[in-house]
Image (cartoon, rainbow, N blue to C red):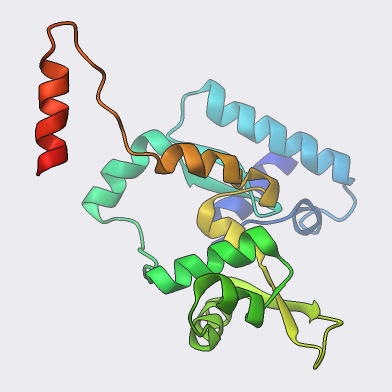
Length: 196
């Protein structure tokens, strides 16, 4: 490995958040952004080729060394990883509205959810998952909210384009229908489920 690649590996290993290419360039200021990107690709290939349990992942506009998904469940089960506090249902719903409608104001969020959103918005701001991104041109010029890089990091996304499309939700939300079998018992089983 080249010295720049080793330096980047050390920085990514030590960091507790995704690091941008520009930040990595400050490690060796005489290197160009293209050199940093080449070193990142060399490091990624090294981890992939040698079958390491970690990988260089591009998340929230930066890069981070993470455990591969294949090992994540075992590590979580052993409770080695630091757990972030779970979001409430209200926080998840509000975060979803903001993610898909941003920039969005409090009134629109409350109209969609049907409940007051002030406390939830404060909580999401305190956790740095959302931020004020501007003001509406409407009466009173209400604040508009959008998601932050911390939101992308929490979900393991590079950018908002990686969010599931709303069309995919309608497929995921349909109940599973058992396939009818040739012996006619599939219909009887379905009617028992429907009656209970």
